[in-house]
Image (cartoon, rainbow, N blue to C red; front, side, top):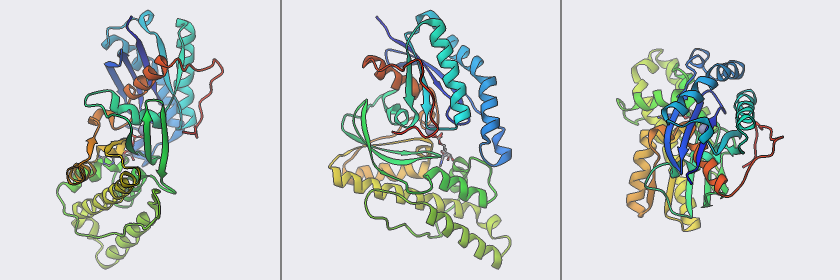
Amino acid sequence: MSVFILGIESSCDDTGASVIKDGQVLSNVIASQEIHRVYGGVVPEVASRAHQEHIVPVVETACKLAQTELKQLNAIAFTCGPGLIGSLIVGTSFAKGMATALDIPLIEVNHLKAHVLSHFIDDPKPTFPFLCLTVSGGHTQIVLVKDYLNMQIIGQTLDDAAGEAFDKSGKLLGLEYPAGPVIDKLATQGKAVFTFPEPQLPGLDFSFSGLKTAILYFVREQVKKNPKFIGINLADICASIQQIIAVILINKLQKAANQTGIRNIAIAGGVSANSELRRQIMKKGCDLNWNVFIPKMEYCTDNAAMIAITGYYKYLDKQFAVAEVRPSARLSF
Ligand code: KG4
Ligand code: ZN
């Protein structure tokens, strides 16, 4: 008998729903919240209200596109954390209500583990064990993945996430939120002519706060000399920022690969959509004989298919949530 899972994602500002059948995606719907652009960041209160508006039509559309009737669903997987608590509550409450009404099991999903398992949505799928560099707006971690449901963090950021480094740098350049994709686009017209220091942190942990300060001081200094500096050099500044962030990430990943002896290397999360990071990891992979896994663009940033696929593996392992399950903004890994 086939297994149908509905996945629901609501950890930040995107409301997502996806139906998968035996691990194959039938639909993957996302409603993004453009409203946060004008505020220069996600406003939690606004995000939770928008989730409330979007969740019913998004789930209905996902089921319709998948040509799946509610009675065919075997379980509902939802993002339990980490994320914005108000946003998580909307998805969790909806999932709980729907699972109760349909009398089917509920499956709680850790958003960050789901980013890792986004590699099992499409082919080619990595073989175990593999290393996954998860780089998102709130997290930067190197994960040692031993099995679908057995993974551990072996390195992570001690301060800002890589996505924050993009978003905060963009803010000081006057770019709209989220700045990652904007910097990526502008960088295509520029050259990485400005150099920024790579933090010398021992071990596999990252730090991006020093880079953020270095970029701030550099821009301030140059603007003092020439008030039009940003406008004239925007593409080159973007290319330089993108270049150093990618170098920092890839060098740590290389260190992790050396330490563990693992050559199956994956990247995931919103920042894995970055063209320079993708270029650098492909190059490094060629040089060092790695098997590199890069998700499709639609599965890099937040999506519900990754929640559904994680739900699928938990379903097969009979890992169901208790009725009292509550979301957690700081859900541990
Ligand atoms: O995984 P994600 O969609 O949401 C979180 O779980 O945080 O990641 C969002 C982050 C934002 O910081 C955004 O600026 C960044 O991913 N991002 C990018 C690109 N696309 C999204 N950063 C650099 N280059 C991109 N092309
Ligand atoms: Zn995410």
